[in-house]
Structures are given as structure tokens and as C-alpha cells.
Length: 157
Image 1: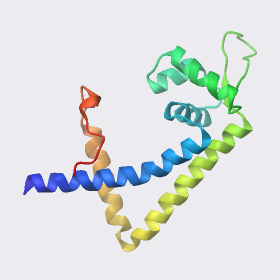
Image 2: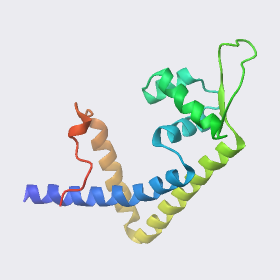
Image 3: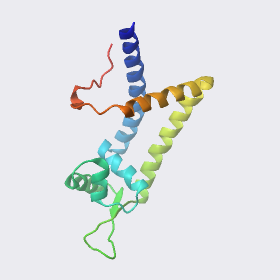
């Protein structure tokens, strides 16, 4: 019975992940963005004036990786480089109005989608929310897998 419950959990989990991610991936694709680029945009929305060094620390990647991402976002007109008046070596970054619009659009569409799902749940919303909170808490207690490539990304049938 335990194995049956685990299989049911996997199927339910991957169904939700795939349904919700399909919308997000389509939005990113429509905007011509990769996940790393999108993460940079959202960091800059929360931290206007952040530097490539700060962003690299937030993402856990090298400064040169972030520089490449920023270069592409600057060419796309979504990010601009500024100059710090007190130190010319420091190059703060911020979203352009178009970058703000892209991030805002993605965020708004995601919020509306989740609001529609919540509405469809009706009276079950509280129970589902509690279950998701438990899932998040359980996931936080576990260390990440030593080899992320060993983690299945496809639903089991």
C-alpha cells in the first residue's frame, strides 16, 4: 500500500508541476527569455541598483556568467547599466521601463492563473493550501540531492 501511495503522490505532483510550468514556460518563451535571464530580472526588480557581483551571489553562479546574462538583457532593452557617482568601477543595474513591464506582465499573468485555480478549488482551498504548506516544509527539511541529474523530472506512469 505504501508504494501505491508514493506512486499516486508522484503522479499528482508531476501533473501539477507540468500544468503550472507550461504556462510559465510559454510566457518566458513568448518574451524570448531563459530561466536564468528571468531570475536576473526578478532580482533587479527586488533590488534596483544591484551589481553583477550581488546577482552572482544570489544565483550561485560566477560573475562572468551573470555578465553574459546582463549583456543579453541590455541588448534586449530590458536592463540598463548605471554609473555609481562615488566609484566608477561599480556598475549598478536596473530594469528599463520595458524590463519592468515584462516582469510585471509575467507576474500578473501568473497571479491571475493561480487566482483562477484557487477559485476553482472553492471550499477545498484551505485544505489544499495547508497540504502545499506541509509539502514545502517537508521539502525544506531535506538536503538537495547530491546529483541533481539523478532526480526524475518526468512523471512516472
